[in-house]
Length: 110
Image 1 (cartoon, rainbow, N blue to C red):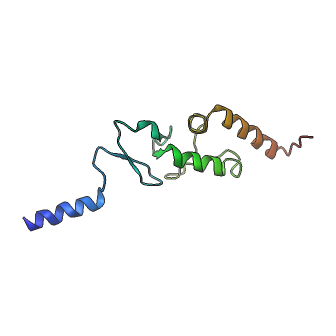
Image 2: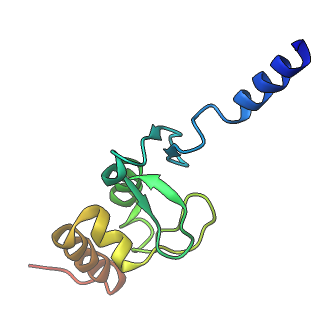
């Protein structure tokens, strides 16, 4: 019996969330997959899951620095335009894309 308890404790150490819980790979916050799916996002290519808050922080903080070439925080595959638009919205994406073009081609607006 004691050995069984040790084994269960060991499993809980590796699986602190219920098996059916979903969690962000960046901040490790757990979400109920039945009620909190709007807070999570799967990247299109690699299907790694992050909370929208972590993705928005990454995108808003690095989009211009990386000239719009943001990669998955887990596997480094590039994100797609649809990933950007779903997280930051169409207007914000268009605005940042235009700024990237200005930076790439050194366009000065007078």
